Image 1 (cartoon, rainbow, N blue to C red):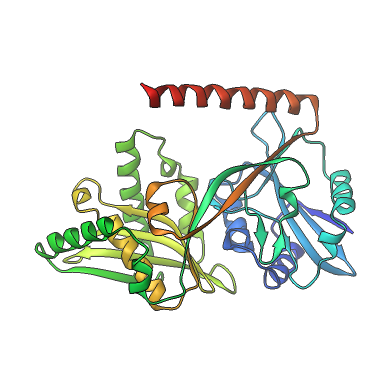
Image 2 (image 1 turned 90 degrees about the horizontal axis):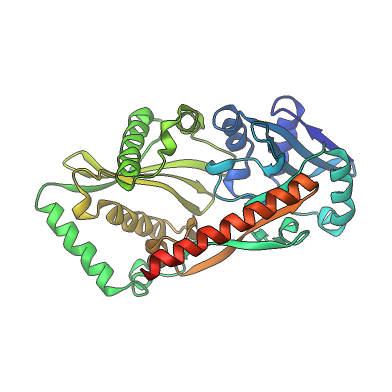
Length: 356
């Protein structure tokens, strides 16, 4: 049976939470994460939360939505720029959805309203030990890598895999800062002055966006509201993590992220770029967080998607994320053709700039 919900209210809440507690998903697919996103940054999306019910039990949720403000109707995963990984939610102990996926997907398409393009970004290849069926139902491309640090040994043994030049520079910067005052790494309780922490994070991030000359993601109130309204306890296994690096009680770097079971998700690092950049405080806080996770027996430290050089320095594993774009109408085919040409032109000029 296929059921489609256009709201996060009512029975879908109970269905979703019961399923997420019996599945292996990243925190970005939890009920609280996506419902808060829809209340804040995702208001422009019409919901088409698709549930697969077999043997009178919820077996899968496909958290779909369509941006109602665009001319091309794209069926997308919910979460937008606030969700680092996207995927369906599949019950762990039952393979009935995977075993009958082609048939069930046909029934889902028949139940959904008409749309132009299926556009699924930031897809992870695995859900626990299950393959993500949406990475292979239509041709998909590797959009980026996601980097992780996998812990299995003592901190000193982990550090042996890091460039000695990088570690020496960190030691030098710590020494310089320690000569100016007391340098301290802090794990915070999100219930204690959480708004003060967020205000500091917003300020640091906006400083950085301005310096880089890029769009200020946090200028929009709805993007700030997502972090303000997300509960500290995200799900039965996931919670918000806040940490700082202080110099004589002044915050010089901070991080907002998520802990899910024994996995640490590195999501929103920031530092005071106007005053302390030359001391690399963000890098020092990252090293402190890695050490703290290792000493507290975390299984992994997840940098999520992106090709930033620092992620490659501190990680020892990675996987490829997938993007699927498939047209269902003539408008959709035209849109994807224009998108493909635009990407080729952008890549051409990027390569031209690198050579000049």
